[in-house]
Image (cartoon, rainbow, N blue to C red; front, side, top):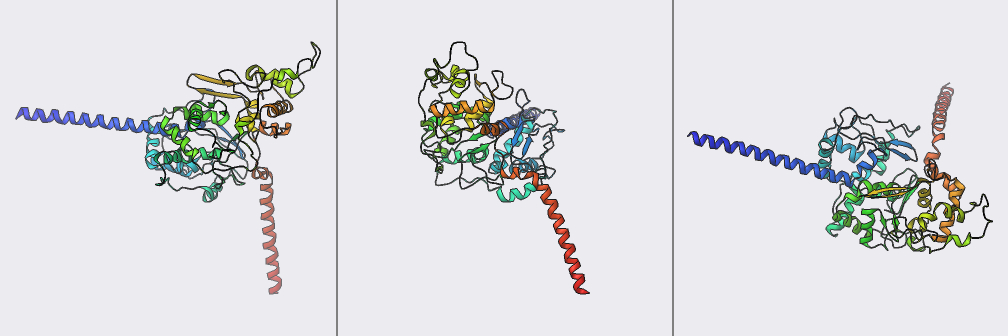
Length: 470
């Protein structure tokens, strides 16, 4: 009897240990799944300050057309982060853009895409941020947009017009790979947030999906399947290479926000998911800009800048860097080669057969000069110095950058595009200002005037009624 009791106790103990081990394994798997979801959603890129910021501690500046928005601490800190969020509160913030205190988030947080994420992914994401992320006791920087954009309650009306909270439903007529790609592009990966144009109210233009749009000073290009305006002439392998490394020879190289996406998110995603994204994009609805006549990566040819400069000035002459060719020779040719063909390994890419110089929008060419390119993929660091404010190479003014851009466009890219100093100034200031932002200084006076007119009207109607009664 004693032996039987001992055996039962040992069996129960081992059973308990086994159950505990299984629970631990399940929790570890859930945390790992949540980390994969956070990677696909690129949470770290926006919620980590550049140049040494602590992961997910916030403080990243998003320069929106309405003003600067600061990202928040999303570590499990109970004082400054999301450590006190219930799972329901977390899901509502991510999917609906509403904080636990009821205040609305700005759609710089891409909840309009995250709204399509699955319940399983949302649960795993919550577990990851609560148990797999180190808490950081760093206070948030308050976002203070100008009136009336600081009225977060207005976002409730915006959400009624532009938030599609319909859960993602696989299309049974499409393959599993297509559906996975659709989920990533329009949901967790939120590619549509940047690559779909915006209307006056900053809502997505849904009848032009993935047709491209400005994001600050950078242009998120058309990534629909159109072979002229989009990526229809890319192979699936080329798209996967670009997503994984940030560059594809003879096509494009990632800079700005896309470089951040590659560095923090895409390079860590599985080849299966990257192929799903590429397959979906290759089979998405084509959207063509009628102004485009040939694919952006088919423009240009080698042109040696030095041949036009030799003998143009006497030896030891001063102040000779006074045009686009001379500026290109002095600031660009040492890396991109005098004929624009780039370095042998294309770490410094060719300037012809390059979408940055062949697109109908020169913003990425200008911004690459203004802000440089900084991208870390694995142990490979791509760095092009900036020539804007704070350059350690040499600061160029707006006209100089316009002159370089026009030389590059004329010889290596889309010669139909002309860049002015004003175009450069707009991008130096953070990008085009929308009509809604331009109207902002007049909104408060207009509201006051409206109230005064309303009061005068009420007073006049009251006097009129009294006169009639008399």
